[in-house]
Each structure stands twice: as C-alpha cells, then as structure tokens.
Amino acid sequence: MHLKWNKLLIGFSTGIIAGALISQAAKKKTISSDVALSLAKKAFKENGPIDGSWIHMNPENIKKYNLPYKIYRGGITRTVNNEVEQYEFLVDAMTGTIIEVNPL
Image (tube, rainbow, N blue to C red; front, side):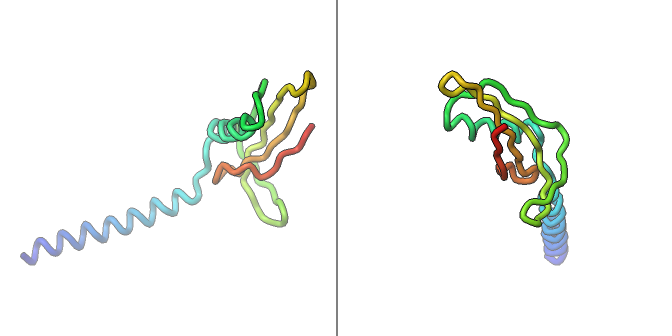
C-alpha cells in the first residue's frame, strides 16, 4: 500500500511541474503569421469582401500607449463603391487581437 501512494505522489508532482512549465511556455509563444492574417481577414470580411491581403512573416516589437507589444504588420485591400481601399493593420502576435487599423 505504501508503494502505491509513493507512485501516486510522484505522478501527481510530475503532472503539476509539467503543467507549470507548459503554461509558462504557452504564455511566451506567438501565433504564426498565417493565423494572424486569417484572423485579420475574418474581421475585415464582416464588413464585406476583400480583394487581397499581405502580412510580414516575422513579428516586430513596438510600444503603443507606452506598453510593449510583439506584433505582425499586414494589409488588406478591398473595393467599396468601385473605389479601392487599402488598410494597414497590426495584430498582437501573442493573442491574435487586432490592435490598430489605419487606412492607406
């Protein structure tokens, strides 16, 4: 009986340590540029079709409102009322949240 408890405690402890390490690694991991672009396209499509899109493959570090962000920079092109509209967007590389959109 004593041996079963030791194995249980070792397994439980190993699980807690592994969970903590995975949690820390997940907090620091960025989404891929493909995922960031897909999220941006999905958001833009809510307001109509898009004609084209692009994204920088490597994230960059910026400060916005005096806070540090790791972001992907990309763009969307769409046609509205026979006029081409272009937008640049910034996507948080950690969460996938669009943090800024600017018309070009």
